[in-house]
Image (cartoon, rainbow, N blue to C red; front, side, top):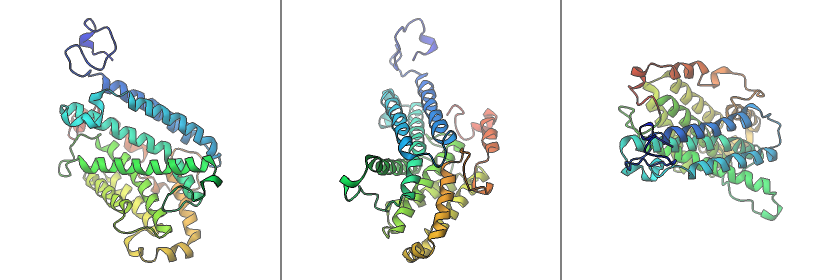
Length: 318
C-alpha cells in the first residue's frame, strides 16, 4: 500500500507512510479485498446453490471461505482495528469500525445457511453441544458451532450500532444508512431465529439476551425510519415473523401450547425463513414480493445519489 504522494520516497509496501502517518490507501485496499470474499460468499452459497444440496458439502466451502476472512482480518493494519480506534483521528476511527461491521456482516452471510439447516434438523434452544458427542457426526458438531458463531456475530453487530450512532442526527462512525439498515436487518433476522430456538424449548424469557438484542435491533432500525420507507418494511417483516413464530410478548406464556398445536404453521414459517435466508437463490417456495423489504431499485437509487445529498448522512466513500 502506497500513497501517491510518496511514490518516489517510499519503495516498500507498508501501511505506515514515511512521515509516520497511516497510509490513506489502506482502507480502500482492505475494503476491496473484503468485497472480493463477500462476492465469493454470495455466488458460492446463494446464487449457485440449491435448497436440496447436501449441507455437509457446503460446510467444506464455508470453512474455506472463513479461513480467507480470518486471514483478511489478521492482515488489517493496526489503525484499522477497532480496539485501536479510540486513539485514532475521526477518519481512521470510522474506517476501522466500518470494516469491522462489514466483516461481521460477511461472516453472518457465510454462516446463515448453517443456522437454517441447524433449525430444520430439530435444534434446541440451548444450542449446547450434543449430550452424547461420541454419537454425533463431525458435521453435526460443526453445524452447531457455526450456528452459535453466527448468533454471536449478530449480537456484536447490533451492539456496535447501539453503541455509536447519535439517534437524533443519525451520524456516527458507521457505514452510510442504506448499508447500515441492510446489515442490522440481516443480523436481526438471525436474532429472531435465536429467539425461536429458545422459545420452542421453553428457555425464552423477557430478560434473555436474545430478547434484549431483538428489541435493541428493532430500535436501531426504527431510528433509521426517518430516512427511508424501506426501514418501515424491514421492521414490519421482522414483526410479522415474530408473531407467526409465536414470539410476540402476548404469547410468552402460551409458547409451549403453540408449539404443540401449530406445528404445521411453524413448518410453513421455516420455509419462509429459508427463503429470507436465500433471497438471491432461484429455488424458493416463498413468492410474496412484499416480504422482501429491499427492492433492488432502492439500492440502485441510493448508489447513484448525488454527493451533496449523501454527505448529509456521512462521507460517500464509506
